[in-house]
Length: 123
Image: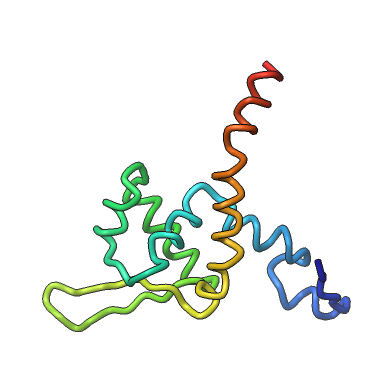
């Protein structure tokens, strides 16, 4: 793993001086990966995303979409119609994240049973 070196003056250009914690804090929350995975193959409207991730509240979905858009993972496109038509899709950064994200998802699927067994042994 390569960690980019930054000078002292560059630290203040970023919200957080540790890139690993900064990125993982955002994508490691409860909902971001599910949203990014849902947008993997096509753009979706808010209500479609809400149906896709059925246990997320509308408020949390809205908040997480705003954070993902702010960080550059997704784009929000508003079409001039009545009523307004809004779609969310992966931005270039989100597309570049698909490979490591899918590797992590695959690892979680393959190791979930072992993790659950380990938890039971510790109780």
